[in-house]
Image 1 (spheres, rainbow, N blue to C red):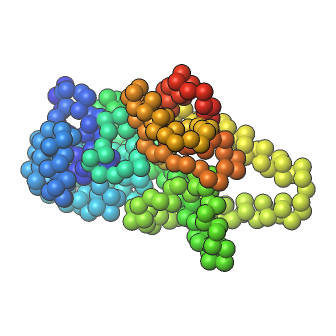
Image 2 (spheres, rainbow, N blue to C red):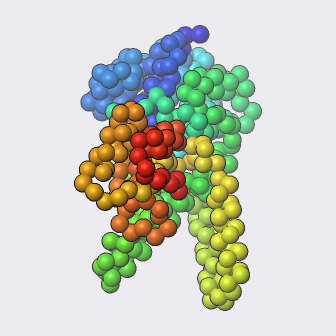
Image 3 (cartoon, rainbow, N blue to C red):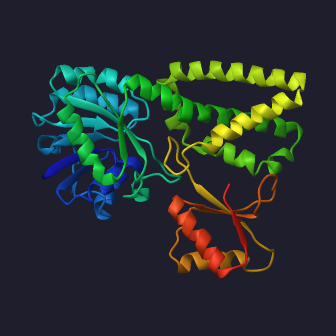
Length: 366
């Protein structure tokens, strides 16, 4: 069945969704972006089939409209939507990271007879912008849908079926469940990461060499603190109630841990770490989670000229793409001096085989 999809907002998520949907030759993608350069780039590199310079240029022919814009901008556009010329049975969705405010704003659309189904593809990248868009971005990632209670199941199925070509795993949850769960596993960890970096900054004033030692575990634990501060400002404000609740739970956990340290009972402390290890080891590392994940490979290499270019050359020969490369100087709890990051677990597995076949270097997966 031929369908026309209008995607408003052509950043990493909107662009990747467009490319993923274009796998289905029955789907035509019309794109709109407030930045004309982005819109033109999307057309030039084949992310979209047609350009809509003005949103209203495309609303009349769209079967599905996707808001891939920041939540505040999505809400603003939703308020304008009842005045647009749209198809009678159009389905409207979004890709926002928080859902309660979106679904509250969507009540007006519902009252106007417009079907709105909230959406959140739980995938991302270290890169941004339409030129970073990838058709495979959502593969094996959870794509959460938040329809209104009692929403027409047929409408939800149309959207879910449309998304199947992206190879994402669609799951229906309520807006309240969505915001609570993402607060736990995505939004709150950003607060923790940011607070740890602030703590490091304070320590570094008195002990300037501290920053040089902040590699290994600290670097990995705080990686997400490098995310876009404007985006996370908005997410934090929009999900502030859930985050405040999580902060209270975290504070209670830290008091519990402080008491463990003060009592210095070795068995209790070991049990605390053992439980954490058990829960962590049971996490679904084979699938995309709520936050963008890089797949690191540690390579124990000798120190001689050209060794890094030797390894990257082997990977290039096997057409294995890497996203990052770094030398670890502080190697506490780290097995290899060279860390190579990959975008997918499959790429990392291929790299392990490649290095094993062509060198004697040992590799480790953290």
